[in-house]
Amino acid sequence: MFEALSERFESAWKSLRGQDKISESNVNDALREVRRALLEADVNLQVIKGFIAQVKEAALGAEVVKGVSPDQQFIKIVHDELIKLMGDTNAPLANQAEKPTVVLMAGLQGTGKTTATAKLALHLRKENRSTMLVATDVYRPAAVDQLITLGKQIDVPVFELGTDANPVDIARQGVAQARADGIDTVIVDTAGRLQIDPKMMAELADIKTAIQPDEVLLVVDAMTGQEAANLTRTFHEQIGITGAILTKMDGDARGGAALSVRQISGQPIKFVGVGEKVEALQPFYPDRMASRILGMGDVLTLVEKAQEAVDIADAEKLQKKILEAEFDFDDFLKQMRVMKNMGSLGGIMKLIPGLGKQITGDMLEQGEVQLKRCEAMINSMTREERKQPNLLAGSPSRRRRIATGSGHQEKDVGKLVSDFTKMRSMMQQMGQGGGFPGMGGGMPGMGGGFPGMGGGMPGLPGMGGGAPPGFRAPSQKKQKKQKKKKGFGDL
Image (tube, rainbow, N blue to C red; front, side, top):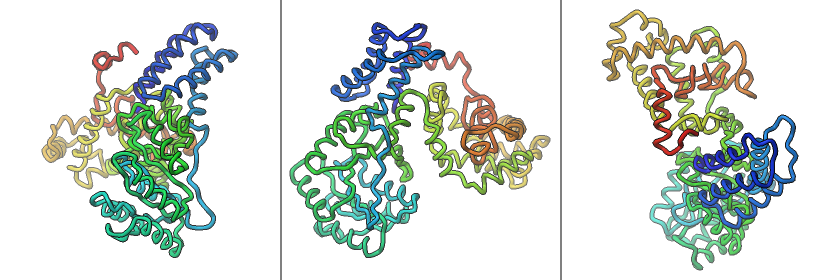
């Protein structure tokens, strides 16, 4: 979501490159670009003015550290101010010693509130906190059924009394049931409206009075830009909220909501929704978000995704197979599925420092297609062929059969086998040392080396030795044409 904002910031740094010091004139040029970037991202004007003033004050009073260029110093200043703007640190969800902890969910219709309720329950379950959902939205058709379905999907109980009961009574009885069952956290899903109205606020206030929640979380759509901040402030003034959940952060949102909510409403962003799946909810960390905005990636979130997706026992077995050159097509398929569990190729690439800008949308799309082609060809192999890839190297008849079964040409199967053999040898060499920081010698399941970085897990297209077998990256000439077509020029 931050691509346009990151590109604008990049042009701001250019005005400081080649300078020997930070001066008022070159800072003003850089800040002009920063201001434009924030305006285009739909950040609140009041927030922009305050942010620019803070950055200018910090920049003019900063001493350029020896060995650090002025543009690098300025990036550091902007990074620090972005963190302050979004709240300094992560604001964790309440966890009361006297159970249950009660969380009240509020928001307008269409923001993904019911889905966010289920996502939060799954997130808490991963933290070994038992949860119960309470369905009080008796107005929207099938809202109760939707929550019941989501509850079954994530194996979390749902308390409901149908659509004829009073929402306040449902909430009160739901909390009482959770207390009787010894549940750690009860999450109450409430009704939304198309707009803020007295009836909606009165009902929310009544539910809040009845259950005395420890948290009141407002679910807001990140695509509404700075209006998300104004909405949060209105709810806080009338109801009293403790934080916000920003949904649809993986869409076309320009970033204005993330940069405005804390400053305008005074309440922290506690979670962000980054996809439609129930697993797609992340705690909001201002420092990590600032790094993403400035194109620095987000290694910590990437590590957390890997830890969730990878089974450590399987990783250890796979590492041994890599070191002994026994990595086979079944292992390849397993690693592809790990990648899918971590998210899309594009989402993963954006978390890797310095790589997100190098990969175009066309390259990612082609990479996804190639992975599906590889999977189709491997699925057309016999169990023996998947376990012993060398059987295919000297057998044209086997390759022809696989090509026919997968709907591809024999030369495609031949290239897959050839590339796989080379990759297996390279992975064995990479497994002898190095690896991903903090992962004990490599990313889990990879035996050493980061995926896509010249010998890591196949599946990150266009990144040297880590591309999937059979993948052909666009030529440099074609990439330049793609960039110019999209308006990037020679950046």
